[in-house]
Length: 359
Image 1 (cartoon, rainbow, N blue to C red):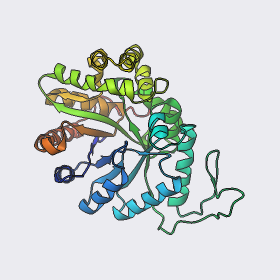
Image 2: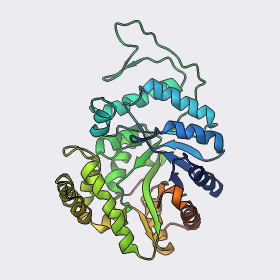
Image 3: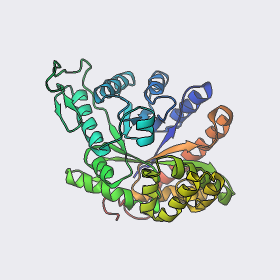
Image 4: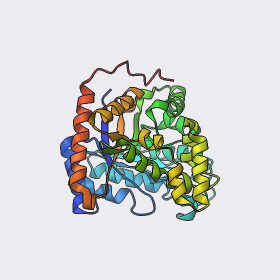
């Protein structure tokens, strides 16, 4: 299996654009534009479509509910045309805090909403008239004056990747998606995520190898592994305490299924009680190390082999520091990582690719 690299980037400054340009020259596979409650994920990629020529342009992720499915399909077709076929649509339902607090929409039936959105996207991008009779979306609206419309844009294949953490959404990913946007991932417990994806794929007559399996990792080259892992672990306190409501936190559930349930519940309780420093200290250092690439070249290479052997095909890399002040370091780290990736990709794996057989 060939291990690919994508980078998370925001090209809003000269430094941000230089990072993407350098990544493209190095052979980085993709650049991922996030969407939280700051910039949107689509506009930066439209800009990059005009400033790059080979790197794939991916949303990581656009939030479902923020746009109608038809509007999302219109944007996807536009970006696919502007980029010469390099656009990847990464989608996800976000969570109740953002969906209800920022967009003013009820967070309900997330898996069904994802399914129907993909169905509509494929109808529109495939050049068909938009008829859809779903639980959430009925198009045209019944009893009204609407009519089934076909897009005036030329049909185009738009790869759709799903950001999923829970078992039901993971199975849906295996059933319908072109790729998986993974997070909260330890290669040692890959089966927690990959088994449900595989189940969905097999039920749909596909295999796991039909999907591009991507996971997020931070990269930090250092001789002081313990201190770096501790810093990365500290950052998870916000994830466990604030990236979701007390009742609904998909990240916490994912770590629970990987054996860290007691830890994340303790961190969440400390964070919600207002003791953020104690919450940071309570996150196990092993979480900071196990979900990132931290250490010297040999240590990072060993971790890369674990991802490869688990069946991961793309690492979505977050480089250390702010691009405005740490561009030189980010460029050097990316050079170093790509050299290691090149080395790993020339090796024979210690055992056969187990993307179909690992449990």
